Structure formats: C-alpha cells, structure tokens
Length: 141
Image (tube, rainbow, N blue to C red; front, side, top):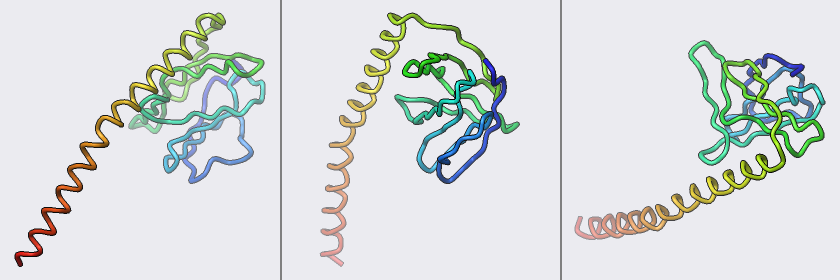
C-alpha cells in the first residue's frame, strides 16, 4: 500500500476533488470517501449503515472502518482495512472469494431491509392508534 495512514476530515458534503491521504466523513449523508490507498488514484466511496460499513470514532480522534475496503471494481483490486487511521493491506482475494463476499453483502442487506419492513407496519399501527386516542381525548375535553 502506498498510503499507510489516513487523516480524518469531517465535511458537510463530500468534495468533488479528493486529496490523497485524507479520509472524508460526511455524517449528514452517512458516507465517507478517500483516494484508493494503493495509490492508483481512484476515488473510493463508502456508504455507512447497518448492512454497509461501520465507522468507529476513537476518543483520540482516530477512526476505523469495518468491514475491509475491497476495490474489486477497479483495475487495482486493492483490499485493505482502515484501523485507527492506519491502512493495513488485507491481501488479494480470488474471484471466487470476491463473489462470496458480494453474495454475503447482498444477504446482509436483504436481512436488514426485511427487519426494517417487519417493524414498519407495527410502527405505523402504533402511530395510528396514538392519533385516534389523542382525538378521542380531545373530544372529551
């Protein structure tokens, strides 16, 4: 890896031009971006969320990103971890292993969506009941 360490920078919007060695964090849009750490120059974007990447902020200001970053759609096919601002080479993965990871990612995403959808009707029902109860209370005042 050409880039061994990243400096976190909190921004309100991800910039169009990314600077090498800077890890941009946009909390408003739950997204991050940085230049590929192998040095190829590609822009890397990570969407944060339950079935995506998780960003950990340490008390000392350093950040970690989980799971690893696999740039398999780029020519470099770099693969690395970001741990306490340090870039750790995770090594190459075979095409078969990459397909497995992508399959697991889809399964994780589908599970999170199913859980959210299962809770949504209950939440809507509770809101409707609460509105009706308020309306009745207002009638008796």
